[in-house]
Length: 379
Ligand SMILES: NC(=O)c1ccc[n+]([C@@H]2O[C@H](COP(=O)([O-])OP(=O)(O)OC[C@H]3O[C@@H](n4cnc5c(N)ncnc54)[C@H](O)[C@@H]3O)[C@@H](O)[C@H]2O)c1
Image (cartoon, rainbow, N blue to C red; front, side, top):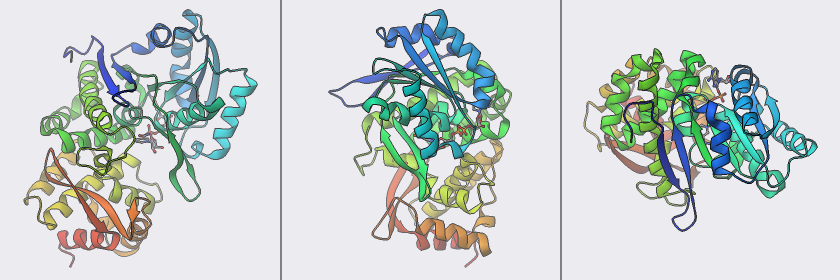
């Protein structure tokens, strides 16, 4: 891996060992090269559906479009409203209809330019249009750059739950330009930092320390630091999804581990009425995982303090106890009990023996809350 942040870092993500892989390329200013990169990856096509949201299209649509048109790609721009509400069946069908009306064919390509919402939605449109056409991810939020754009999971939400209608549709390539993070609001940046911290907590104590130590440089949007950290974090996720591309295994080392912090995180996110952003709730979920791991006796006391201090440095919430008592606690418990990953009343829960040593365990929703409340000395 190159260390100076200006040379592109190219990572290979395997899909199936015997099948194919796709590149994830990280470098500042890469969006300007979208047209030439796409030519390398997809020499034969001639048209692109450029899917984005209103915010990102206004900021980077002309850079992306210019880069494509310089290389003679015909561009069909498709814009959705920003926010989670766009991951809906109606918006998905409208997008696919617009692709049909715009005359796109099986030889053409979808490029998603945006955060995780655009990547998930546009990726699913690419998976379904004419039974599937190639797509390239250009993630523009930190969370999408280090997490959502890599791994091939694409989905929309149903009234019954998040990401319930989706597919595995692996991108032809992922093009990560950390320079676009200069316009990302601080709170959204914090959400990406929470996922980076998760990658470190799961797979690399060194990355965990690096993310914590570099948090201020990230908030200052120092380009070289951003490129280095994003490449390091995405490499950890890429390694994990290459081991288990379709989340088939309940194995140690498989994709299931990426749920660290997400069981309690999703429950708190839902109970907050989405007052907390996803990454902020995941940060609290990571803290919860440390408490539960200590309470269950597979981590030594002190891990909770390490997580709490890390979250503080990343400017993320640490007030876990606020979500365990009273009406909020009941709402979190209801959300945990209806967690979609439960089986026969239990949840596959990811804990930590230590930084870099994840542990897969089974817990009931009410047990998770009991362990957390005891850890907070409220029992
Ligand atoms: N597929 C996966 O593996 C996976 C993994 C994690 C999360 N996700 C999904 O990702 C979604 C969350 O993604 P997100 O946090 O990126 O949210 P998002 O896509 O809603 O983006 C957050 C906000 O930042 C804005 N934005 C994005 N890039 C910007 C930039 N460079 N400058 C200024 N504003 C910018 C967006 O317009 C939006 O308002 C969720 O729907 C979640 O389910 C998917």
